[in-house]
Image (cartoon, rainbow, N blue to C red; front, side, top):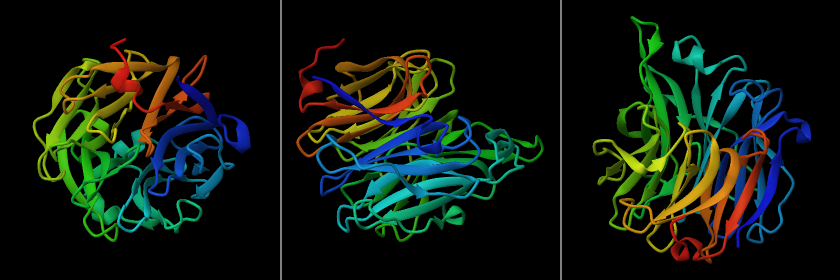
Length: 347
């Protein structure tokens, strides 16, 4: 049976709105639930911090909200966590801009957007000071940049892979061209980060998962006007990508989504499966993302961004934005017992 609980409520703790959820389960079983805490309004720029709640009992109870990144009155957000299973370090990739650095100004080359990384060696109890890695992962002619927003992955090779997106400035037009999804990666346990493969135009917010055959699947928000998710695959660990395609089975309202391997070779996917931001749904593929065999509606009403995690016992977690009148009233957590999606019928 689906269990849900609310973790962040807009208007509480001095923040106007909570948005952009990301979730990670650590090797020790700690659940880390991240999001942006927007102090003075619901917009994407302003006084925005990154907050965290932790659970040590499979999501039954949670620690209070903890502010882990605060850039003064400026913006720090787009949390994208990944854990290195060899070292136990949790890496958190983030983006920064000035309080008045709106996306339209960044796209016009009139405002800056940076990239930084933090780490925790104690399952999120404490965090390092954000380190600016913009010069390593953002090309000089890129304007807009976003990490995630959702979790990253560690491939079986040990490579840490972070889904990102960007736009490139056209100086003659004084504006940016279309968005592109891309990845950044680390092959030295997070000590350094590099730009990986770039996917086709008119894609941006994306998520990645390693398939059973060792290839990497990227699932992307699409601006192609067909209300479908875009996808591509990589056979070199994210250094290059296949031609982009549209998945006719994955309906979207031009929004964010999440993918994750379920521990048994299946791939789970979550998004608002509609042409408007509603009907937050989790689906599963058992054939390497060629078809989607079952789906479960998490929240039938207004809903938007989400992220997925899987516990050691196979329990599926979905952290998602939702509300009764609008999608951004709260961030809730759904828990699906192990085997839910493998037993479900298409619905």
